[in-house]
Length: 570
Image 1 (cartoon, rainbow, N blue to C red):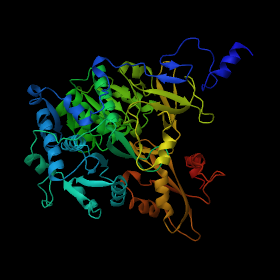
Image 2: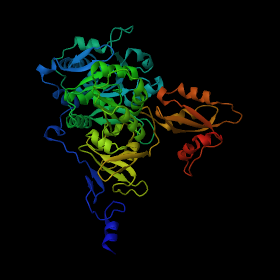
Image 3: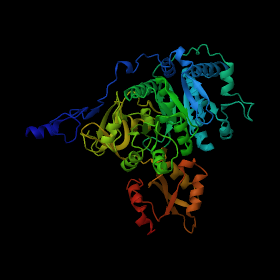
Image 4: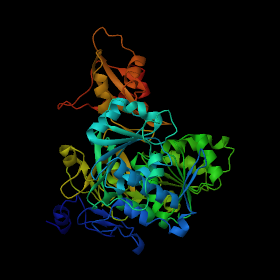
């Protein structure tokens, strides 16, 4: 056997890899592992002290007391209410004391939070973490049944809810506290009252370790069913360290950030519930996204930096010619939670040439992080890429057929490994074992490749999730709803590309004999049972759902069928 053939045949676990000529940045040809080419400096090491918790770590990074009294942490964009770091610190400690002493919340208790963004949200998160309780936030758009399911699955002992969402918890039987006291529900205790009446001098004594569970965030995961992602204090300490590193690396320490990303999402929690406070940054907080409000906030508060999602970037592009605000302060826009097309990125750069647009990649299961662009120049030079692996991350690109690791420029499933990787799925050992291997590799379900310079490109989604406006929609969940309809014999849900939302759910239905079920009826039926972002937007009727021999839905065939030419023949 020739040396060439011997090398190719015997490299352990690396598919078809020839002898290395010029080593690629960060790529180990012997193991097939991609390592981050970015390194932490001395100021950004991930703490290893076993008894450290995320709240203690974040609070230790706050500005010094003499600066904290005047340094603004949060500004409410609607009311202009300002919270300094000194006030935030005091509120966190007072609420922790109130939760512990007045409400009896203890280590390991799950605290369910149902609220849009408010200036109190970060206080709630850090107070819950500080006493060793477990945070489980939810989307306020969810229906009563979806909320009840999450509360039951997570084992919630206490619910903290925005007053306008209180009606959704009426049947749960879980002790509830509202956020604000000046409401018709004044018979319930409020977060504001606890903060006002409780001692902020000392945090309750709770023995915590980095391995303790800090949060359970609900994600559709890589198999399409709703699961609770268990994140430990170590996971969150790691992500905060990475965010602090990225702020310093990009010289963003003095930037004003705008938050409309929901804090119940890992993207919002990592940035605006935890990470940016460790760098002493000022955040302008919006209750929820609206384009006019965002533009007003950028101008009024001289915003420099916006973590965003592709639909927001599309909105900016489409409104560029109509914008009458001064957006000259804006320097950086990040894009995450869903793929950003090269075409949209190019249009943004054409209309906002002074703004750096950078795409990143992460998952709930990786605490929201994985890849990152250090500079706008890098991002412009690698259109369509999500950047390079962040410090502490390594990755493999695995052939989905053979399971072998692949070299640069070869497509396969992305596997990642880092201190940010989840502990597992709550109460779901089977799903955990399918997603995490015995060596700690997270199988993302995303088809990708690395180029020869170590930049990641997400090619497609192996997993079947539909990405709608940055939210994950599981086809299996919608199919289960559809199959409960008495006139539906079979159903399948697929993603259809949409310029504004990224993707929308489309349902294919096999109707019962003699049924006259129509598209509007199907859409309304689903809409009555799920959150608005999950509802079906299109419906097609066919005689049979294509399936494999094993019974799996052949979604690719339905995607082809959904193309305009095919639809016209239905």
